Image (cartoon, rainbow, N blue to C red; front, top):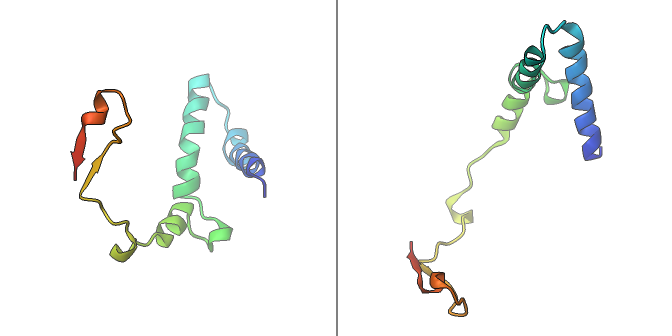
Amino acid sequence: MPCGAVVERLWRTEKSEEAYLRAYASVSETHASVDRYPRFYNGTRPHSSHGGQTADQAYLKQLTPIPAAAQPKRRSSWRLPRSCSDETSRLIWAR
């Protein structure tokens, strides 16, 4: 599904589940509703594509820590190349 289609589908869902069901008294009330809906959509609303879980539950369940062996090796120090003509070329960062 193209990226634009996903966004259009999300807006369609928000309008049908939130906007069309309310009679907003002011623009600020409408803005508050639009700001509030993503938290509901991700944190409270169950999704059939996630087996009835919320989007937050499905996403956070998939996160796994990166093993130490897979992390990049840190260099003990790093210097800017001497070809730099400004003051920063003389700086040295030690980690």
